[in-house]
Length: 474
Image 1: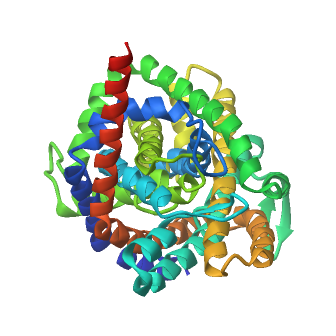
Image 2: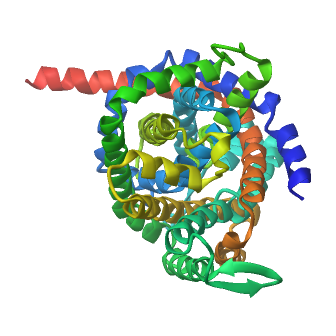
């Protein structure tokens, strides 16, 4: 099964998709005149300053935290390590480069999400790629919108939303409490540690308790957990980098050399270059979701009257997720050499070893800190992706809320199942669904680039008028 999935993954998320993602990001960057650099300070300001009026269900910060809750997950801890292990240190370079252009993509998604969202008489918001495809590109493209929503449902249920996240949690917990699998139980002919079984039950119950409350409860939980977990993880990584500052120049050189297939002794190969590029971009998509079309589903619920303003807020998600958090994880992994094949590690075990090697604590303390971060990261991702998948199903079923409630229980069941699947199968499945979601969304972004530019110019004019008014009043 893993071999079959690998073949499908190579075909779907290979050169064509990588090219389309990068070309879309570069094209939008040029069309928006490198907005991700010029407007980043303003975006960071808007991130924590909510609008006082406008339609929507949750604050702009709440929408960002909901998006970040789904974005900051195992991709930041496990995904980065997996990318470096498969593609070498150079994968980190391509991950960062993809994120830079991805900021323009994420901005564009946020603009279109608010521009074409639908708000009913009760104030319930529904928006995302399915609506900006249907309402922006026209009714004749509704089949493409339906296709995106279909892939979105299964990406959450069987890929990025449930199995990958809870698998990462259970691996970290098992590594800390029962790394030698001394306490096991047999399930369907396979031996599993009791820590894995207990983790599946506890996480499943907690997820169920939050999901019953819908988007407002998910938003409230995310607004509390996301800033806390991000700051905690960043502080730990900063400590590691300060303590190993002398190794950073060598690690950076290794990353750049690996990115272009350069080897000081034996020379570079196209195979090395492609492996670094493919794994870096693929894991970058998994991590920050730029171009995937998931984050605009949360952005559409924001209380705002300006599509461009919410686009700027959405853009900060990619900056925080990949350019800050993933870079720190990647540097830690490269500095310690935990990714190297001779260690025989995969997934979260690579990052655990990196933390144990780099932190001046007892290895058990380092493992515990990483386990806590991973649990928070992955738990909030499970919540965020349930929201995405439910909105996709709501669109597919013409707002059949009975079907949505049934799906919610299936989603919780998938959380229970996740820890009992192999790491390879889990990540490959997630990559496939990511790619299938991205294709319709990228087509829409390219088709509607004129609308994105128009909304951006309109917002810039409004900002100039506000500034002029303030100067006049003074």
